[in-house]
Image (tube, rainbow, N blue to C red; front, side, top):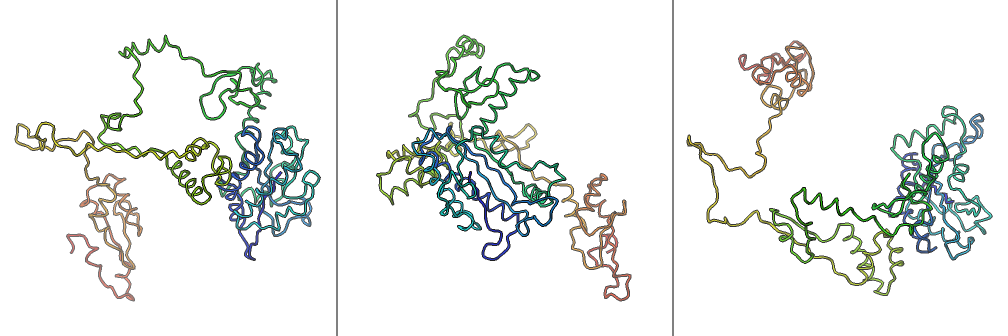
Length: 469
């Protein structure tokens, strides 16, 4: 169990609770503590990705007693800390459990480095001699956990009151997460798969659900991301031996032949030749570009090559993945970069500007009446769009800026406002889209003209109708 927190008064300045929780959660995001946690487990402890998982849960600082104001948290009420429950197979690592605790120190160090308001004082693990025996620090180990969900529910779900019976600090803290659109909990894919499998097992035990097969009894091949062999009932690969299926099922060739016959094709289309140019692979395109690899891969290639320029070529694949916090899904690509594979060359074609095939080019089309029409390009004809509200504003006195004491009035509805768009929209909603008609119905009231204390004794000419100027 890792506990991550931050100071509410870094450098003596009070942080708002929202800024405080944003700083803690942002530090855990990709490129931060989460990647360091993954690298610690997979590269330093040698675990496979399906041998571990995490459950992150945000909690408010201790609420004390709802009935005793003397036990409240004071100035730190409504502030956040994170519990990160890391569930892993201890038998899958070569280290003893006591040595494992010190490996998680780099995760705490990463949080202190990434979160500006986090300090060493709140994450001091140096005073802990045995992470198995001491569960009060920012790192603690429990070797007896068999069920992650039950353990975390007991560890972090200690509030049993009804919602409105909870301390007011807890309600305010929950309102902060709601207003900031923050999730108070997140889980790794492995933990989500375990939860899905557990739910599948419970459905099989409940006669009312109609599911008779327990989790993993029936399996199927899944071509999506992640594991290939999954439970047919819930789609989770949790605890399912991936060797139970050798590969995806063979396609129904007879059905494929029938489909090709129905489409008028006697044979399936040939696979594109990899050595053909972009123009040969896409002969119907007016223009096309091929940049070789995705922006994400280009960024990874640049980071790896920069690292090699500084540290030399004698670097192992796991080491460079760990040092650069690169997602393990890119390990094959990083291996190719380490082996010296060059970046694919970019390629482009542009057939939009080419000489006429027959020595002439269509300029215009002349109909029988002698009217000339421009040839269409096969696309959409573009015309200037006149929006009715904007059109009325631009072509009536609504386009003039109001002076002090003036106000627009709709002569039909009697609505008065300083906003020209409101008046124009009122005309349009009443079916008046002709600017001349709208201008005749437009009234400009001038309160300064009727007030002897003001300098203006007659309306401004620009605000008078055309027939009164």
